[in-house]
Length: 278
Image (cartoon, rainbow, N blue to C red):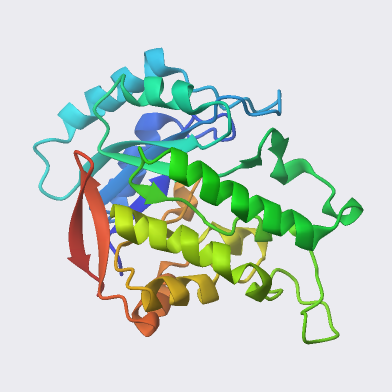
């Protein structure tokens, strides 16, 4: 099994209660050799219950202390990371935050469409096809403006929220697996941008915890990424509890190998290290 998990959270994320040191100790006991702690920083996030304004005054010293503590370990490596929520009007705040610390890895993700929290919106009230077109155009535009990240996190996360849609060529609802053909052009542009800039695409397994039964990004997007020449992938559970570290990673690695990926990436000092997928 893969011995790394490159997307995890601790109590420094507003939606997680796992103590920081508990997370690291548990990962080591589970045989994880490369763990990335990537707590949330989403400036401008519109939900006051989960503002995702990271407590940098405590988070950064905790990262540094843990980095020094585990530096001599041969069997466990900590990647001091952060997951930034890329959002219109907040890029300067993100850049300022990234300049405060020498991170090992930065995940860039989209949790909002402009100032709309996509996790707390009733999509049944709108034209969802039009929304998806606008959403991916927004992602493409923002990624053209912002490239200070290493991994594109859980692309197609919108599938978790948008609900059932009819397949264009069919007649039955298919939860989360509606066809992406109508936005294939902008998806291609997003994927080409990652390839051209040397960014990794994360295969995020957290969707199974939401009973989606699919990966993020969905398989068709991963296959297209490979067809376009994409080679850089990471594996992330997005776990908010140590019980979910490397959740569904056997399925994830089998999928990656079936598509044609031979290596996955871990990061140190924001430089990728390629490791063969077992």
